[in-house]
Image (cartoon, rainbow, N blue to C red; front, side, top):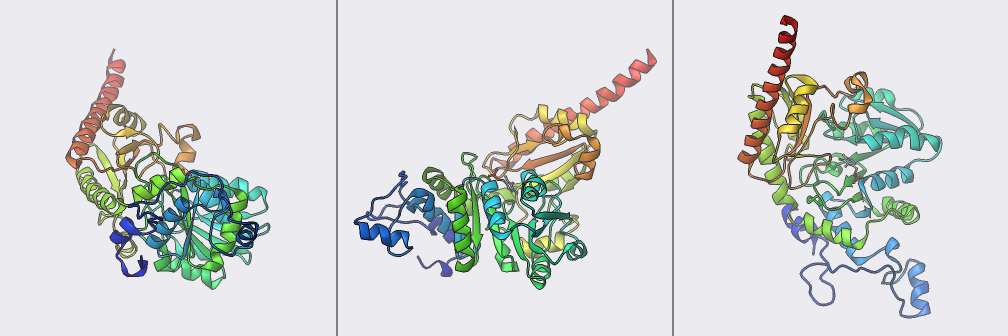
Length: 410
Ligand SMILES: *Cc1c(COP(=O)(O)O)cnc(C)c1O
């Protein structure tokens, strides 16, 4: 198909589909590790990078290529590389772009394992990192050094939902011959296309919205041109963190309804965010679709929708947050995001419980912070369940307060 002419919703359905020799409606799963050569000469040609055909699935497979083409088309890139996880994509990308003695500037609020990758793993290979609030352009500028090669941005950030200005950051980086890598997982290519704002590389966790059904771990690197593609493919071939054919098939199937899912995710999240903002048990709500978001204007400019993730502060701190977690029935208590099912998480009592109150404060994780990934269920069912849980938390706070009082009286 001539992909340049179609709108994103059409690309989501059709891009990359390889009808194969028998006009199949979807790309078949080439569940094979290796491919035969038609002759010794054919094998030699393929190894020399010429001729048509496949060699070995780590180096290329039609089912994997199909999903790569799909995501490349959606992001507006020239090529994409499917990886075994989002972290495999991030690691392969950074390892290709950085070598010993180089420096990377990274958003201070990024996906936890990305922070560890830069802070300790890349550091062991002699690569320095500086973590800054990338929503503060002066801080990004100030962090640039002569050996800065990469500016790595995640926007919106998790769980603060702070937004970084991709066009302004790309301009700063390019002025200093550094490249910009954007983790676009929270938005998907349907809500934000970093290449349109000058970014150089995009990475995704396919595990989240792109697959969308909570049944695959995968990642993707998207590049703008062939010159960027070749070294990246070489690194992936040798690091070996590729996405297998079965997973590629599932992700590609998921992408065919991405536009419908994103539409519903955004609609329901907007409704829930507005409802939460008026709730008596809620201190504050952070969602890029609410006009009181500190960067609402930038969000309107850079994003085509506000996404599925909402952060809010429940009144009553850790105890109240825990009470909400234990009272929900429809919302699933789980990490991850971007699936058809709604997930709820309370960092202070779950993912960030072991790090201590002070470290949590520094990471902008307050005691009553609850993170939602709004799925595609009926929105009124989701609201009813959350309402019941918030009132249960309110009763719990009152009981704790009264309990203390009674104890003092007796
Ligand atoms: C989940 C996630 C990742 C890591 O992806 P995996 O598939 O779990 O390796 C990276 N970045 C963001 C923003 C994520 O949400």
